[in-house]
Image (cartoon, rainbow, N blue to C red; front, side):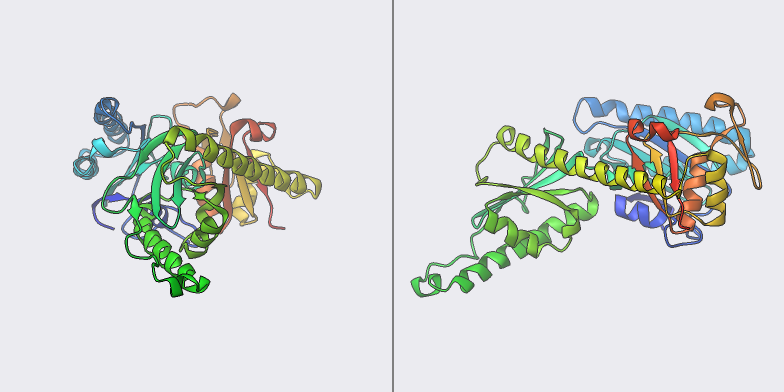
Length: 372
């Protein structure tokens, strides 16, 4: 990885999530890990305050670094951070921004999720925002499909973020259609033309999905949505469809219909995870005691770790024990132990799932399903 870089979510996950790996890439490992996390704004004039908020958090990071490192070491890290800040165009912010840094590099990632403002200096990068962004479903793409036109829209819940208007979309079909009566009589010929149109559209869409991998809702008649889904290179991001003709449908009429699909999908996902928790509790493979979770994670006996979206576990990690803060109130020397646990789960190829806090509250914010 370059010393100063803007990363997409997928690139950030490749670099900072230690899944299927035993350690971070050599150029990312360092003596200390800096994580700056701030909420940001997509539109002016609100996004004018984002650079100020980032500078404030960077100032807090510098203060923490001086408490842990000597002046020369701090200067190297701060130089990386300042050069990474120069890469940021706040006029194209999403809903949050993460800056990771150490003595070897600094990287900036823009994310489509809400976050709490934090400046963390410690032994681990706070990768929770990356997981949450990958798992979130409230922000999504809408692709309206017909044989004549394809639109690309980004939305959050039932609110429009933007409709793409550039050289890619809306994509009008000016090439892949049939006027010859003999060919029109051949169903397969017309079908192939439509599929080729959709294939080109999906290739145009791929760069948006790579940059910002969000769930996808298709909108069109049953035949067209089935064709398009069949042509998609990445249909695992597909979560549902609505039926109708939407070439000219205004956003305020379209979004309530797509949001209903998103709500249904989110409810099904939460229902699935609750079933996993219930089944694990029934067969005695579920653990919610923090010390026992720590012991099992260190042994590699972890299939899935469920954790509340905003849960923090304050304490100190010993060689083979946890020194937990009374009532989970942070002491001056405490760190967030969940970051250590998350990294160990990653190293042992376990799955990490973030759940709404109220859904996991009966397990005190965290629960582990054992492998055996």
